[in-house]
Amino acid sequence: MSITLADVAADAGVTVTTVSRVLNNRGAISESTRSKVRESIQKLGYIPNEAARSLGNKRTNVIGVIVPSIANPFFSELVDKMEIYAFRKGYRIQLCNSYRQPDKEKEYISLLKANKVAGIVISSRTPGIENDLNGNFPVVSLERVINENTSAVVCDNYEGARIATQHLIDCGCRRLGSFLVRSDVAMAADKRIDAFQDVCRTNRIPCHVFEAKEEQFQFMCFEEFCSSVLEQRPDIDGYFACGDITAIQLLAACQKKGLRVPEEIRIVGFDDLPMASWVCPPITTIRQPIEKMSRLAVDAILQYDPAHFIPTQSVLEVSLVRRGTT
Image (tube, rainbow, N blue to C red):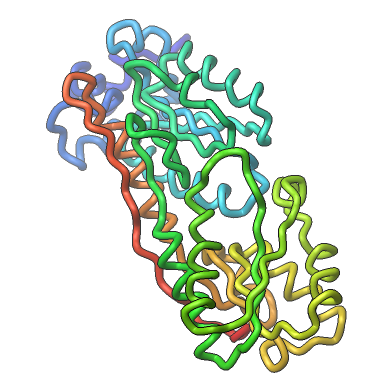
């Protein structure tokens, strides 16, 4: 026997209308009432019929999230925070792992639209993706400004890289290195290299940018590449790694070569992933407000009004977290 809205309402001691409002996140409902309804839903095992609900509401209470790779700790952390916040608001997450395959990414967009999700949060490096995202439909781009018609949530990449580079110089570094992964589209993170070079130029510090391949970025395999960089340029005494994953693998390469960090080489990452504090020495890094990014992305979907839609582009502040590598 299937559980109905009436069963949930009876168990929670509220009306069917109240249960419906809680499920659809509509109307002024007290938090205590929401909690009672959710407890009854969980106790009875009620499963909302999203297809039926979408006929009346036009959209379901599901947010589609497309990320390049859930194996990447940055996206794992981001999706985790997003799911917690969305659930609190009465929404669920449908996660799509594109693995940076444009065709797969576009197929997911079509699938999510067909399923009438409330909106899509996407992190994409695919050229021309804006053509697939067109329409009267809420979309939020993460760490990339797709165009002026699409909302975006990014951190202040330039300021973060400026702080990181200046910190290395203030720590006594006199030759700096950094890493670049070229993409076919302009990404917000590209500004990290711009800031790195600007700060070095202003301080008259020699610097070198080492270009990695897209595949290394995709599969997070930087250690061998970092090892070759250390052999090529033994004179460099400070690295802005542009990301915590790279910083951790650079640290491992240094340790295998017997290079002491931070005595001989200093390292600064970017993101402040939990694992940055797990290694020894822990990584000095630039903290992105990942939880705030996730909240803003979800809120942009929930507050979408097609009649009065104005795309927002949120640029969030970052900060230096100093640890053992400097």
